Length: 294
Image (cartoon, rainbow, N blue to C red; front, top):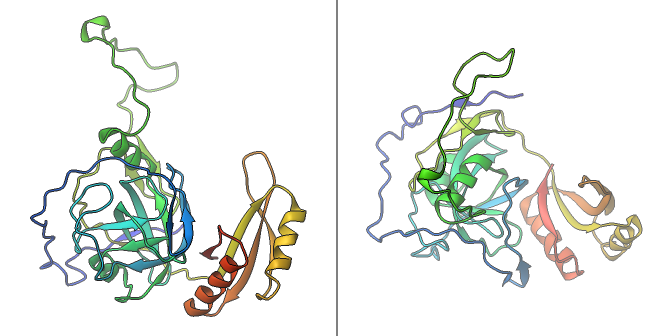
């Protein structure tokens, strides 16, 4: 297990960079939304507090919005990003697998339009991670469950339970079970699989502070993955449709009590090759194709 080492802004020589909140007012709300089309590809947003994926991240360009999808003022210096499918807003940890740098981001916008990118980050977040302007990077994106659920509850998402009248109950302190010492319980949090740090479940602030940490770089190969078939035969048929792409092969996908099968092609030597292969895979009818890093 790699240990995440805090890296302060001072250590990066960035102490003078102060986050500027734009004048436009922010009134964030919780939203998921319906399916939509971008660049010929359909995306279906859903609530996913267990999201943990690898892929490519891009950077907001000059076409960045004035307001984000969840009603916040866009700020190019904010620790923020855009996702095609995640609930908005939510908190994610993004790890640049090529530099080893990690940040906590508030995902509050829909995008990017490019189907080969799973996240877009603000220019300042890209600078801190080491992603070149206009470029992309191999990343791992992990939703921080406790913080994201707290954020959803605070903004009206999640299951709504009617509270009991104040006079209808009273609190009673119970003794601990035998063998358990009397002590205050720990704050509810998430064991972060990416860097083993606990993440608090308190409601995150609207403007996230810079929380830059580093782990050892861990770049991988670029692959195209598509399909989620219940029958292995259907996955093999998909490989036949992708026969013009290198090393098309069937893979087993871990599922909940059942066996699922997908198709991978690759590895690809660089992002340009992976982008071209993704476009070919989509043209072949694999509408759920995506670029992964492994």
